[in-house]
Image (cartoon, rainbow, N blue to C red; front, side, top):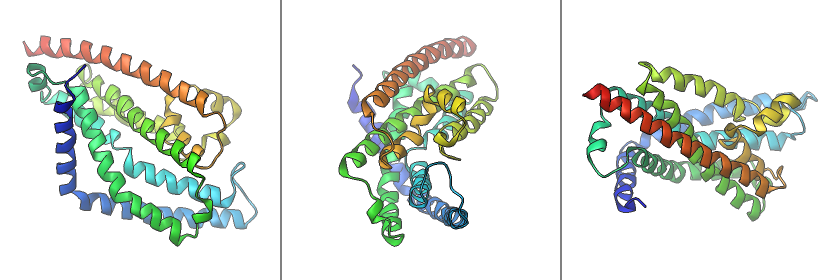
Length: 266
């Protein structure tokens, strides 16, 4: 069992550092609000012309993309974390961690949680403002759905960390590990429901997505908010299996990478 106090310090350091740049988060949120406004007008126009997207009503599709923006602003920092890991490996900044009784992977996890905490604190009031200004309060789900949304949002944070940390470890073997991350971003944005809801995909692609972890980044939490998932236990079981699997693979690849790193360093 690792000494959690060491990682609490990393978490607090992330809070302190990120608070210094909170204006960046606010500006990023404003940028998303502007793009979200344009997207809302597009969907309103589409639905007013008698078109629709799958089985989604207009309030549901608007809520869907509002929550996409919310999740991008809160738990998706794992993407930038992945690029940081690439640079740390390339520049040898992971070396001090190999000489101290502290885990680099767990430090990066604590850092990601710290940044997510600040993001949520800064963006949550904006989400509430959007709900109130858009007269969407009647579409806020019951408390049980909200709890499931929050639980799977936290699960999504861990998936962001594992997927992009694992992708970044490619830098132990490839000079441009960032290219791997860019590839994962393209695949992830398609299969996590950020561009279009997964349940409007062709049946075969929906089946494929159901067995991949990308759905837990954004699509699954939003489906709980919208009340479109009935069996939370089975979905949670699949998420748990993927978390365990990715954790094991990440630990193995990290050890392989460290051996290569140490050999090259010698």
